Image 1 (tube, rainbow, N blue to C red):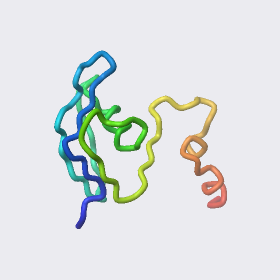
Image 2 (image 1 turned 90 degrees about the horizontal axis):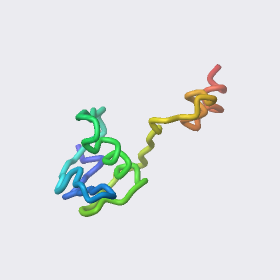
Image 3 (image 1 turned 90 degrees about the vertical axis):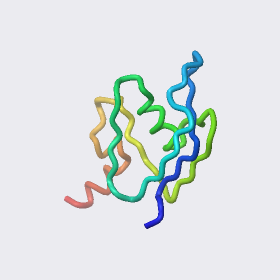
Image 4 (image 1 turned 135 degrees about the vertical axis):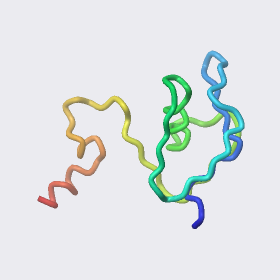
Length: 94
């Protein structure tokens, strides 16, 4: 099985110069994968790099397909389907 996502020597530094991680190398297949860690250790920043929302300070990233991410803070007026952009598709399934 080939990797769906390859991170090669990825580094991310905060605006104040603190390194969240440096030289992170990882290959992820298409299976379900979990990401755990302490608050403030860089989980959300890593996901934002993977989703293409921010550029890493160093290293490279290869994606084998499209990646979507649901933001942690969602407008409370939206349904989950609306937040994911699939409300019309879900409605057709009714």
